[in-house]
Length: 480
Ligand SMILES: Nc1ncnc2c1ncn2[C@@H]1O[C@H](COP(=O)(O)OP(=O)(O)OP(=O)(O)O)[C@@H](O)[C@H]1O
Ligand SMILES: O=P(O)(O)OC[C@H]1O[C@H](OP(=O)(O)OP(=O)(O)O)[C@H](O)[C@@H]1O
Ligand SMILES: O=C(O)c1cccnc1
Image (cartoon, rainbow, N blue to C red; front, top):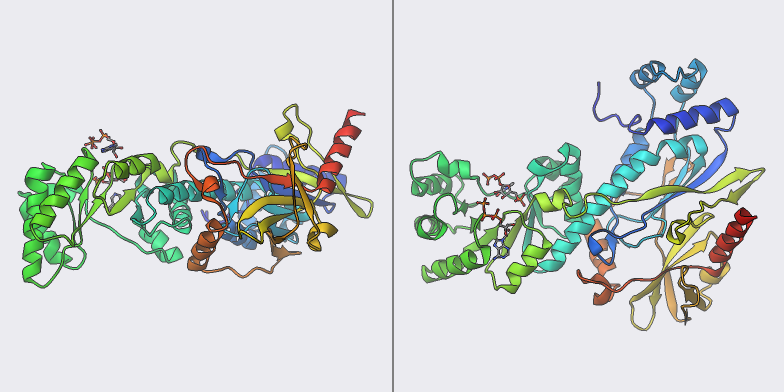
């Protein structure tokens, strides 16, 4: 069995719907789905989109191999062998538009649009949401941590606590997109080109009779990469003094110790005192790394306490998004084929925020020409003229349409980009460095009020008058 073949990485109900469509002869009917989330995680003012690279490689490998077919043939649903033959011939022929990784995104706007045969568009829902939801969540968490320590070195240390191996490496990648500097995971480093960093564990120190000897042996072995963990016994009475001795020894070899690492206790007090001890020993170049169940709030607090920490190793809280372990992204049908045409469809709910926005849509980030800052995201139906011709726009809140604002001097940057065109990949994958650059550029389009960690200003996502009217008409039709 191959663990990395992902075609059956889908919910059974997708296969059952594919089968039922096939039985009804409707499997080739066109459909349009859009993926979006409704609520921002962590009380943040924005999310950082990630997951596209994995979505693309998943789509590229979609194929029902004989092992998957044999497994499907065993199911209690007793799928018709002719359906299984159809699956043998299956090839993804749909089109996909998506936000780019690193993009700043908001609730209720389509982040991925899939247009294809209902057969294929339904199949990919589960995996697409799985990749988008997790990676976007971690990229957003990482952006919050970066926000708490804008100038410091951030290292992702989460693998041992991650929800298994895929989460570890794709989470490390998502963190790097949002501005982390390195990961401890070697496989993530090899696969994605993320810089890797590592210190040593308590076990290294415990394995020697004395801490001093442990430090020296480590420094002898890796003289250019010495970061010593100083809290195995007594941080200030033994760890830091032994680290100072080691640094002095390294100096006699013409080498400079990189850092000490604090992994327990009061990190503010210990770092300030250790800093003083290092400075007094003439070792102001030795940096201080901290770890121990850190998150953005603890980092922010430690900085407020004047902690002398240059570099942060963040594991569990980041990789598991511990304060909100999932992003509730959904994938909703917005149009279906009837006759020769695509007809918009709606999903009604008692909760106004849950009523879906019907029709295939495009999103534009409206940038005010005077300030260069984003004013709103404008969700329009495909091919709307006003926005294409940069005519003055009325921006109104779709839930409270009486709240509105006009704008005429603007740029409108499309958020969704073509990725697949009728099964063919038309998007060239950028390097991870380019993605990071794009993320930084995206951040610079927003006011600090949107970006702050605590109680950020709500950024407007507005519907075009046409998109809004379509929604009202469909709600009215359903009422009738
Ligand atoms: N000055 C500080 N202000 C706020 N939080 C801190 C401060 N120093 C450490 N912390 C955080 O408080 C928590 C302390 O947890 P805990 O008591 O388990 O750590 P510990 O004292 O190091 O114990 P252990 O040895 O079991 O790790 C950690 O999340 C740590 O990052
Ligand atoms: O606290 P996190 O944010 O999850 O960061 C990763 C943690 O993993 C290690 O601890 P662990 O006790 O597993 O091993 P050690 O013996 O190397 O400290 C490390 O010392 C960090 O404390
Ligand atoms: O390199 C480190 O210090 C490290 C790596 C993973 C987890 N904890 C610490």
